[in-house]
Image (tube, rainbow, N blue to C red; front, top):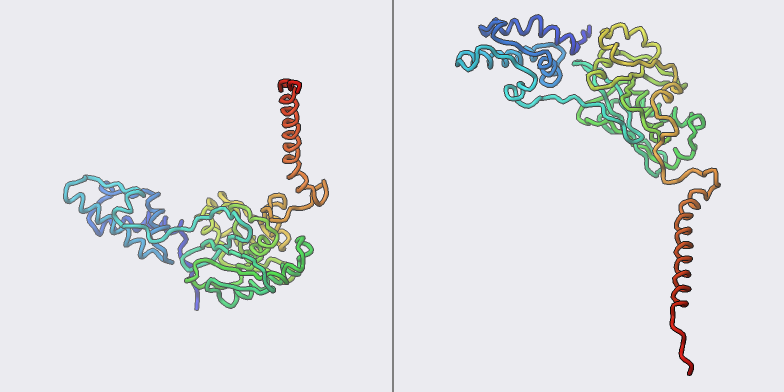
Length: 342
C-alpha cells in the first residue's frame, strides 16, 4: 500500500484560489466582478470549516458561499458580493473545528508535542501529575501500545538520570505518576511523543515549567538519545497554525526541514537535539524560575533563616508597642494629683 500525504493548509489555500473558486463561479453563473472572497476568509474555511486530506469539502463550502451570493444578486439586493471572514458564520453556521491554541504551560508537568494526522499536523498536550504512592505509572487518553511503551521508557530514563537532574532517587519509590493525553476519544499511537513524555515527567518531578510557545517531537532511547521521526513537514505547519514559534526536532531530522515552505520556516525557530540533556536545557525554564514548593530551601542564614526573618518583624513591633505603653504609663503617673494627707 502506498500512502500519499494530504494537502497542507497552504496548498489547499492555493488550490482554492486558482481552481475551486473559479469552478464554482462558472457552475453558478457568476463572474469575478460579481463575487469576491477574501484570503482571510479562505484561511478560516480551510482551518475551521473543513478537516480532510483533500479539498472536496472545501469546494462544497465555497459553492455554498457562491450560491448565497447568487441569490442576493438575483433578488437585486446587491450587484456585487464581497465576503470576509466575519461573514462566514451567518452563512455557514458555527465553525465545526476549533484549532487548539498553544497556551502557556503555567504549571509543571505539561508539555506540548506534535502529531501527524492524515489531514495535517496538530499539537498534542501531555499532562503528568504525581501523588503519594509506590511508584506506579498510570496512562490514559486512548493510547496505543507503542505510545505506552514510549511512556514507560521515558519514566525509566528519568529514573536512571535522577542524579544528573538533581532528583532524589527515593521520589520514584514513594510517588505514583499519572500521564494523560487529552481528547481521550481520539486514538493516539507512535513513538514520536517520547521527548514530550520525558519532558512532561522531568518538568513534574523537578518543578520546572516548560517554556512558553515551545513544542517538540522525537523518539527517545534508554541511552538518552533523541531519535528521528516522520511527518516533520506536517508537524511544523501544524505548530505554526497553533501559534507555536519554537520547535525542538531530532538532529537527524534536519534535512527534512527542506520540505517545509520557506515562508513557514522564516516565522519559526528550530532547535535540533542529539540527546535529552539538550532537550531539558532548551525545553524547561531555568532552575531559578521553578515553581516554589511547600518546603523552603535553606538560606544563607541557616536552616531556620526563613522562619527567623518571618518572625523578626512581629517581634520588633511587639517591643515597640511595649515601649510605647511604658511611656504612656509614666506620663499618666506624673499627671495624677497629689494625695491629701490623712
